[in-house]
Length: 228
Length: 114
Image (cartoon, rainbow over all chains, first blue to last red; front, top):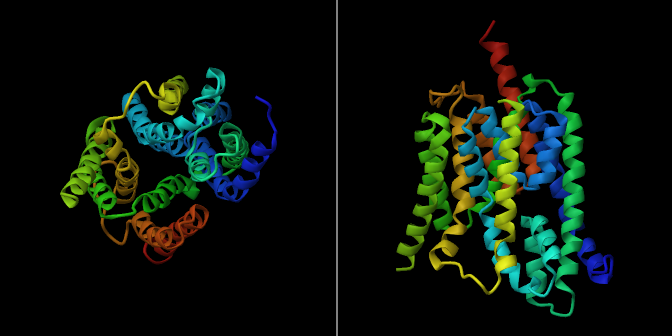
């Protein structure tokens, strides 16, 4: 694939306004990792290997709570289950690309690249979809890594007493508010939140997984009941 | 937590996440998603994020729920929730939330702890 053609550039140009919102998120995740006792190397490895902000923050928070490895990994993967939905939705647009490129496109998949590309693909068949998506995704990747590195170096200089670990639940709060868009998603949030509070004293932070499963089921049942 | 354990967490989550991302891009046309699974995916973010936020606000220590004016994280969280809902802005919500936490702690130290 020839990189840097016009469709790539167009994708890169159109993602710029979104980058501004990525920077604080990346910085918080870098700062939080260092505050939780990650070495700079480990924090950077997580940012590059995972490249998934919400999952990274969840891992840091759960390591702070001394959760079990299995619970941490399951929670992060449940958060990332949404990528299956994005993957399914983008798949028809990428079916003519090579296997190698598909793997790169998959690694670079994020909420933002998905949202931007899919809204463009619906009403534009003239552009090269993989190129346009790469334009979005590469800039998002660079911005994420650079802002995480900034956070990693800032985090090393900030004393623990400032309570910056509180930035993690605050970030999830914004994500939570954005995720609630109707009565069914509100039900999922309400039930998930209550169960997590009740289940919090359980060992290994097991309450979190139970809350996720019961919350999702409640949302689904509420929706089925609403549309009966 | 031991550094090697953190690396294990990152590697397992990273591999799993890559497979989730690759899933349908790679298997397009070969597998179909069950309707119920498709419908339930959109409930994951609200359920999980609420499950991560609420205990972090309500528990100050590991085992006791603290709903009182002495729970500064809860107070700051309520202010931040209102801002998040009105502005939907990560940076501003985080700054104001942290600021509120510091102000509450400072006021309490000033008036009650001497």
